[in-house]
Image 1 (cartoon, rainbow, N blue to C red):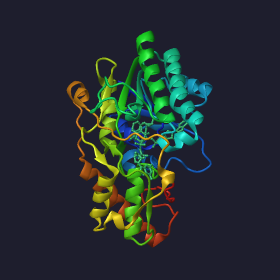
Image 2: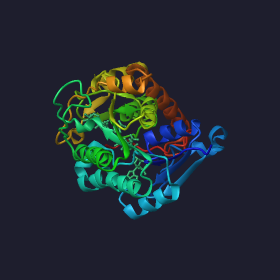
Image 3: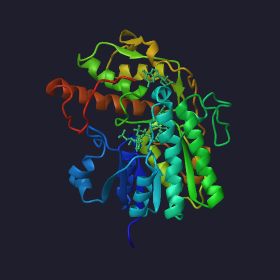
Length: 349
Ligand code: NAP
Ligand code: F7E
């Protein structure tokens, strides 16, 4: 039997890289859309071409952009996927206040463009939409479930609400197999360096190796339900194997503050975060999401999905990786290509 074909937008991102590995392990032909950039942006998936474990598997990359519907249509026509995972987005909440229009062009209109291409060309394909706990915003209830109303607090959150409803409407109006995964924050050693978890663990590694003195952060009291990205991409796949399309919260069911993350991360290397962290108002947001806590009961009962990595294990995994990276940088110099293929720059947002 021919392999199933999966098309992934956002394949170069954190989740795209874990999902690619998962689908290749399952025997899929994986096709990914990469946006053109003036510098290399495929470092999270380069190992799939170079590591003999992966390189015999079927991964193909095509240039495309979520803002370009003509190209997206052409790609869907060429690939004719069985499953589409729409992960591409300007995904940084703070940046979405600076670039609201571009953010919504990718997050909201980009989703609509993908849905329309699928509806017209491969209406039997299964569609996964990367929805977000940011849609809950100023939360109406805790914990948040599939029935909790959306009250977004950022241009990013507003764009994701639009995309969520477009996905539901394509399911209802045209019978598309289209599902929303409402994923709460998920992190990993591959997390972008301007998200708070990775910003912290990168700083811990660098401070421990004497390459950085201070870490400047914003709101330390924000609480998030943080899980491991490797666990969460499995939930995405399970949603598209389910017998019917639906919407699912994917979360750990635990919430922790940024401060707790700091305590564990700095504690891992025998440091006290209070000696190194300073507050910089630039990192506060015009409107903040104070507390997120998801209830993953539906995903557990209907998909058999469970998170495997605990909060402490996640923090320690990230610190340990970034400690090794800082050690390598201390020896070889910053900005050089590190062993895992990732170029390094200083965290900004
Ligand atoms: P990420 O690391 O920021 O990756 C985003 C991906 O989208 C990258 O591949 C990026 O390409 C691509 N992209 C950005 N603008 C694009 C454009 N105009 N056209 C085509 N591709 C574009 O995000 P992630 O953490 O993997 O998250 C994956 C998805 O889940 C996103 O939609 C995000 O909003 C959503 N989500 C994430 C979380 C979380 O906690 N991680 C939670 C809920 C939902 P470059 O590599 O070139 O930048
Ligand atoms: O912020 C606070 C900040 O940027 C978490 C995206 O993947 O998850 C992510 O969005 C919290 C916020 O993630 C800094 O104010 C303090 O309360 O790591 P973050 P996020 O905004 O929760 C959701 C589910 C997504 O869908 C998004 O795509 O940490 N915080 N000081 C800081 N945050 C940052 N970035 N930088 C700081 O210095």
